[in-house]
Length: 477
Image (cartoon, rainbow, N blue to C red):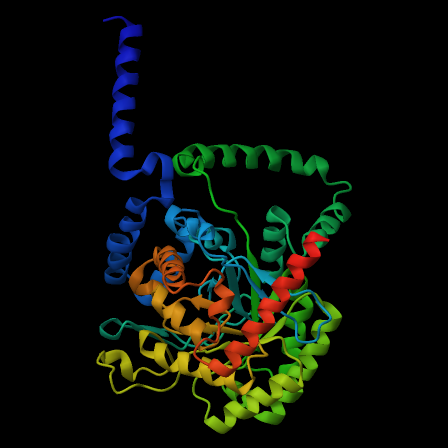
């Protein structure tokens, strides 16, 4: 057999193998977006990781997989929801000074998974429309002693007492600068100015570095060409930064102001976290007077250092009815732009059966789903639907997200349920939510927000219709 015949036979065999692989798995055309790749991660790799690694090590491994671009991409089915339902959500600014925050979809990542902003592009590829990093403290700190994360497998929950472990604002600022420099968005102009300002006299030293970088990038590209050649979703969306205070600091206003000053220029929105149960004294900042002082001061800092960024406050699900009323009053008095409801809980429902239920720390996941939804509904009513709410707590399906939207959340965050459902849960939530909206006659995701609170809902529905009619009228003029 001649060499030419051998090449032809090898080509035919390769083509036949690829065709068979495409018909059975869609891997060649869809790559990491394929159902086969999702199934591999969700039913094999994720359960295996729970068996082989302790929770914190598994968390670091998962973050590294996402950072390196090995995790599943958003599925084609989940991406196609835009053809049926308008999933764009616009969060208005309460002070009417800044531009509203326009989010391309309602499903985002809660703070805690990527505490330092090291894997942002990969997180957007998972299918999140917005990603919140943090909590970030002004100075680096180790957090609490290990072990500090525990699975409640029987309950599909997680208890953690990390205690704001953070690389610190300076390191995170560098990482955000790298991300914005590559992908654009808020703060990209700062990166450009810094790069131009430091180039003189350095070109010769960088030639060798550039050559080495090119070789490394080429090797990496060849090694992972099979999944990088596929059409990838955008590597950016809305980026939020969740801010915390240092454990040993007595100046909480100074700590949050430092975070706003250093990280605000790179963020699409900012979050003041006063509800983690793992930093001594932090939750006392949710009391009326301390909260009013804090939000007044941080709003001024935002106006000075990051006027483009909406400012939200994250609250606990353990507040009493009177404390919720106080928080709602303060939020409206200080013109804060929104709330994240809710953080982890110190409570332990009687339904818990896992032996780890006795561990100290904040409980998240399925056991707090109903409690967080009820908190959303309460805060929506107390604020008369005027303050945007980002709902979080136990979301593992499209139905869970739908229930929180009906309770009054404008956006939804996911985190702990990925421990049990795998990274493919993001695509499933997106698709299931779109199906539910279509089945119930909704054409815009904004139209379902607050449906459980009828008086507020119909008033806001009328306002939305008027705005849309005015917009259509303006477009025809």
